[in-house]
Amino acid sequence: MRIDWAALPKAVTEQVAHRVGGSDVTPASAGDHAEVAATVAGARGKVFVKAARSDLAVRSLRYELRVSEAVSRSHSPAVEWHFEAAGWLVAGFEHCEGPHADLSPGSSDLRLLAAALDDLGSTPAPDVRPFMPYERFGFAKPAMDGDTLVHTDLTAANLIVTRHGLRIVDWAMAAKAAPWVELAALTAWLIGAGHTPEQAEQWLAQRTAWEATDPATLTFFATSNAEKWARKAQHSTATWTHDLANWTGQWAAYRLRFGSARCLGTSPIRGTSRSIPPTT
Image 1 (cartoon, rainbow, N blue to C red):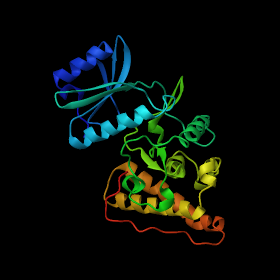
Image 2 (cartoon, rainbow, N blue to C red):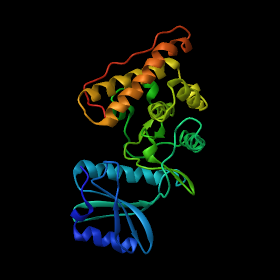
Image 3 (cartoon, rainbow, N blue to C red):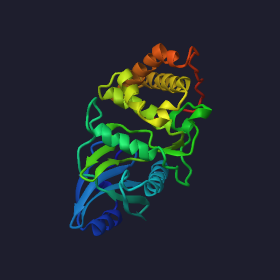
Image 4 (cartoon, rainbow, N blue to C red):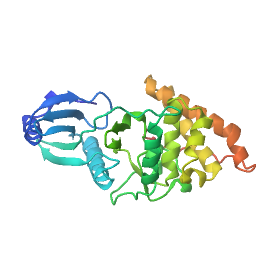
């Protein structure tokens, strides 16, 4: 649950103000991985600040710090500083100024995303304890395993087009997996931005990792992800949950209808979900 900046201890807010040179605070309008998230402006510029105190939130922010430090600055906001005070872990990230990426068909922002995907597809996961595929998605098969760092949540809200290029924010759910997993996880967001499943696949097929993946494996991911979000939507009134159930369902239906033709007559491989609750 997001906590208001004013609830932070004075020992925390004073340290932030000292580092930024002021304390003009604008709370973040989205996201929930950190208990406190805000842009803080001062004489030294702007910094995006995240703070956490609960065990789970602290572990998540500590992990995000390690991953962000390992990713090229050209793709991830730089970690400016971090400290601990009064029971809080506080991190200051490079402030990214600009609009969220437009992922709709024909958008020029897709070229920026394509370049980032090509670079990230060869970025090894850092030497930290990363999420593994099953931990991140709630389903897995051996083909999902790999050594690549995958963000796993490339929604437009996490893609900011700055004057320095595309920045990918919020690495709290990054995982270690095969590079095609990033592309498969992106499919729902492309559909949500206006692509048909066919258009989404045509765009993704320009990436080597997609073309090198067994079509039956892609069908497994599509159907397993759709089943997961359908279950989540049954127990949630949140609009975004139902949106994801719709978008993943569209892709799964497309794969089941047309994917088998690409498998040279083989039927899609289906997985069985285990009892551990999936993440997002």
